[in-house]
Image (tube, rainbow, N blue to C red; front, side, top):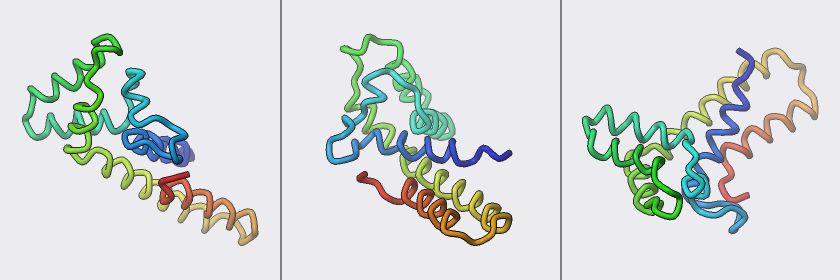
Length: 130
């Protein structure tokens, strides 16, 4: 409870990382290159498991056990995107921020700071290329 914003703030960049962002401020798939297991990877593994695609699920997970120089990052990105994991994470981030905002809106008096907080939540979730 009370910790909705940090996970939501994390889900959005994790998803954006697969496609790069910030006008080349971050390398496409940097997290995969570095062998980091992020929310989209977990969601992809879950989707593959739910679809009964154990072979591709094992392949994706196995990529984290190979040396960075041998990791098939492009194929990993394609598979993760094909599962819809990217969109799932973005949707989860939006839902988390929107649900948390309802609680903040009800509890916090209207003020400029409140408007700024809402704008920040919207920016993090909705603006892709920052």
